[in-house]
Length: 278
Image (cartoon, rainbow, N blue to C red):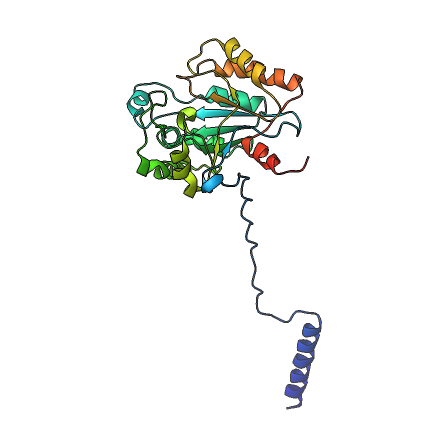
């Protein structure tokens, strides 16, 4: 009996010591995984008069020597057969050159292009050098008489824009920009009204590169260099079949503009500078 009491005393003392050393078992604590904050909303312009879609043509002229090179990835809804026959509407060499030169740029992509080249669309959309913006799904015009392009019916203009964004998401493009470029650059009040519910800012340009179907890169170089001013938006193309000399022109344009003190930015950078104080 005495032995049992001694054994109980020893066990009690041992339990007290272990508790004092912090070895008492506690219920596991809940681990809270921090939820990543959503990316900040890209800068846009406020709606225009009567709530119309706002139109942006260039950035501030007095906020430094910045320029945005933009590239339209055009492909219409009806050009699938031509692509299947071997016509190339992509231009991977141009994108590689922009990467090698470390040029920030904005690619205005049609939904049909993203469907045809999903790997390239995803690669461009996930590269921090670039941002992807909307150039419609079908590259059909939003006004009559626009460079002989087919016309989007009035009731389908909004859904054409939304269909392009759906194609971007399916291809794996992250965070496409709320910017829209009208096919052919053609728009009117009815088009601006139709797109207002989408919340996009329409992005035009103030420098035409003139590269569509141009085979001489020097022509493109001269046109761009003669037109660029601080805050300029330059429109070019990244389709091999429709803009065969663009990549060669870019290899001259980029170092020359840098020599002149220009810095390459994205459209979002120019839009973000619009509301800043001088």
